[in-house]
Length: 89
Image (tube, rainbow, N blue to C red; front, side):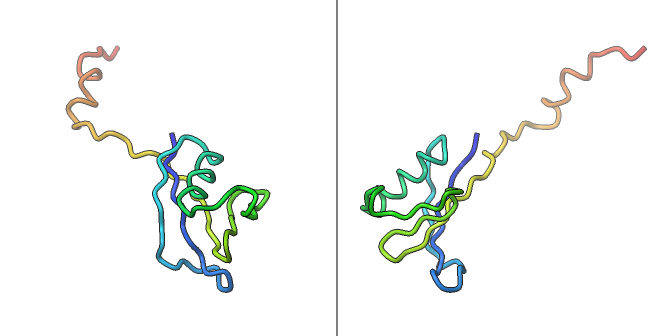
């Protein structure tokens, strides 16, 4: 599962401006739709790059980035619990 983040970029330099939105969705298409709703824009008013990484809305440039979901941290003893009782031949 991925976690998506929308990051605003400066249209000229393509550097981050500091504005970010965490998007709790399951696909990149849903992430685009949620970003557009956060910005109060429609899909017709946005210019979406074919690779779906850059979105231009009202002279703002946004990128959508997906990250792997953080793994649950089990204690080392729980991770090795099954291995402790295996017999080595």
